[in-house]
Length: 563
Image 1: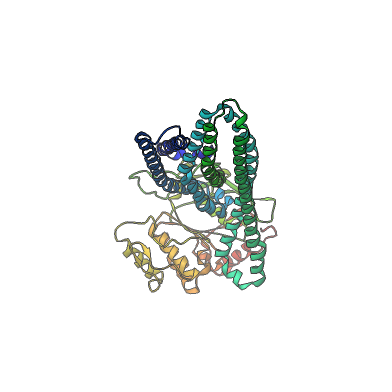
Image 2 (image 1 turned 120 degrees about the vertical axis):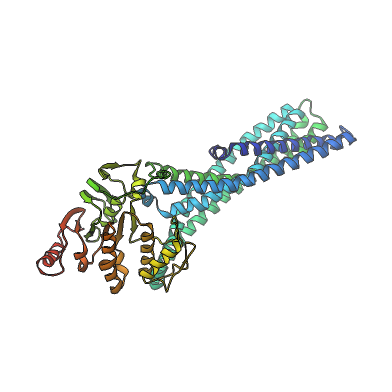
């Protein structure tokens, strides 16, 4: 029922229309059964009226079934696209920390396999409804032939249905286990594509990945699916056995019943044999519905997880002026999370910081000290667990956090490089982009035409320069660079710190740099050091020699409490 409600939720008119057409086709089919039995038993001669009725019922059955299938085929594709768009919007709207906890593997399976399972179930609905209508019409005709025999048949069907449902329910449970294994399998596929170089370089790691990872998940997925199909096959064969039992009851029990005639017995045998086809077709689609129900449960499970926290996407306000940087205040901000192999939550903060226009701020500290987490809090990608962020004195909350994020252009250490200038338009955009390519020493590697990059297959340092190109074109008030220079050669590293950052400051941009390059600390107006989630600030600028240089060296000496 949950699956049917889902289909009606997406398009009630289409579903109702297709179901009505399928019911008409089923009713016409049931009428054909009665007409054929009447002619076979000699109750009526094949006069022109009966021939016309036969042709009319056949035409109605074929036309209604055709219309139902065609209408629902288009609806299935439309619903698939709508479902995927809905899931993508939910993913984009959920807080980043929640997305990270769900994991990309679960999201990919939901967007691909689960959606296709639901689509496949949608395609079978016309056939399901037609065959169901044929069975109901056949049962009504059998009741008209002999109400007592129908009661016997109904009793046998109830006994058979109990055994059938036990087998089918166990099959659905196995499908759920197979779906869990599929989540794990997609996680291994992601590891394969992202870790291919490491797997090729290390034979033992590769064998462990194949044997302990892929082979185990694949075998579990295969085993659960095969076991489920065995249950469904047993259920179908049980239903066939039930039908033979019905025929035996008609042949051996019905003659002893009061009012039983040769006409009614022939009708029962003919109709029962005829209904075996629709029943088999009906039972054939039940596993398809079972997979779709499991897929829908998984999608809703992800959807419920996605909506546990309020969405943080805000619609753009038409003709709204661009944001102008004034002041960003972090007041008592803290954020807690669990680190790998550590049951004790790591807490960043409380943080009290202020950022103003036309300043360069470095964030430094050891690995695991909370630098990237602080960067995500500053940019609004993480919401503070405690404390508050204020922009120009106004509180940043769930209602305006997405608007606040439009202040920032960022290149994170785990950045993603799009192959087009998505969301960037304007006059002579290609000319501006190609000019920046020359400035970033990439004009001999990449060209941009109609907003599309000719290639992104470059070294990591060059890819970071392309990411820098994107944030230059965005031209926002605040720039954040997370270990941007770590993959650059010494020459371009010097260009970045000594030329590009001062240029941004001269344009009154706020520049926040997560860095370990102590050689260039002199560029910063302030340096913020994180040590085990706690913040210490050194005012600058700092020189590269003398007493201030010694102070920097002492400042970055290893701490006994460093994470």
